Length: 324
Ligand code: UDP
Image (cartoon, rainbow, N blue to C red; front, side, top):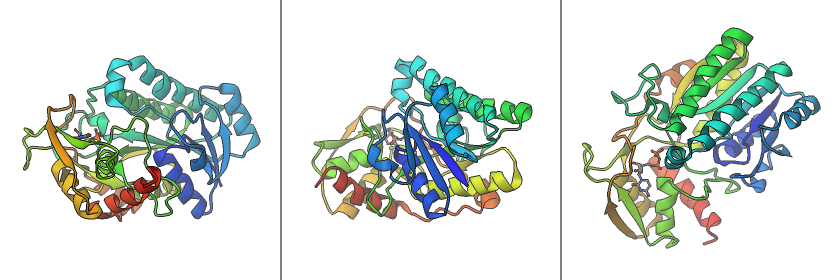
């Protein structure tokens, strides 16, 4: 069975490729390397290019006998999406349509899509269940929700079966130290704290200490990237056996505050560093915690990494990344 992984040179995509290989799937990666890394594509055939390129997609589908597509190429920065929504709708929606059309043309009917907890906007209850209102508050979240809706219509009209995974806070790295989180620019909490621990940054800034939470800082649900990868493969197996379009939250089901995460990093790394308290970052909900019952029940998914293991694996990788 051959899986085309669009965006397989990126953080989550590369972890999925590695696990697919380990579980006996053949992997073809298409990635334009705008944010990914060539060295992350070692788990399959690599095609350099963009999913907006219909001719290239034609060639890929003709060259390899693709059975399913997993799609990770998206812009992911909320703030940037507000300033430059066109970039987000163009890539995350329009280019995804090009990929879907190419699939239909070549009769490939299984699709796994990286969605996000941002589709829920400011959640009305915690933990968040899949059927809770979807009211994204920025173009990034809207672009993901648009594709989710397109996928419902594509199932009804064309029989294209898909799973949409709504990620909470992906973190951690594979124990091989071959791949890990390396965004440029980095905006995510754990790698930024690790940079402070390695003195790559002077401090870690806490965005807001006046939230209605136990210690005033935001609460997030961190889920290990290999737990996400495992869910993708379980999702693929489900699609093939059940042929049913569905969506799932992927989170650990537990929440930790920004302060707790900083303390845990200090404990794991045994390094002290400066912590600054600054204003809230616009658009951050106080709480984001997944109800992951549906993925557990239907896919048999069981996240294995707790916060300490997430931070430990992230730290191991981060030292390699920063060559320290
Ligand atoms: N955060 C922070 N300082 C930083 C980066 C992030 O306090 O330098 C906070 C952010 O406000 C949010 C949480 O950490 O409450 C997680 O942010 P991240 O950008 O990692 O993920 P998000 O929840 O936005 O997907």
